[in-house]
Image (cartoon, rainbow, N blue to C red):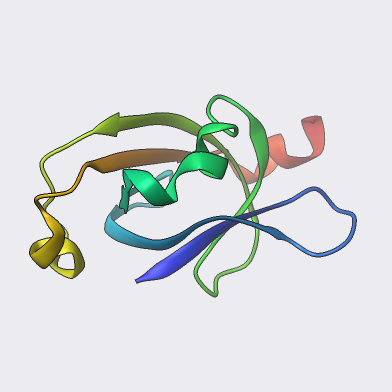
Length: 101
């Protein structure tokens, strides 16, 4: 269980959704699940390049490429599967792309 926040370089990070449940993480992509009721602020970031912070990790330049209804596989949501759940995919940009925004 974690939170996802965005950081624009000024002031504190803005929490977009909490809790989220990371279900798959690779160097270039993070897949997570979140209750739909907790995802309102996250929806506004769909398709936006920004610095995202997932959990206690550092900020990463990325884009939220999808946020769709799903059948949950996250253990942390196993008792809440009767509620609408969304799966988000965060595409991490390569380090050389960070300076190009």
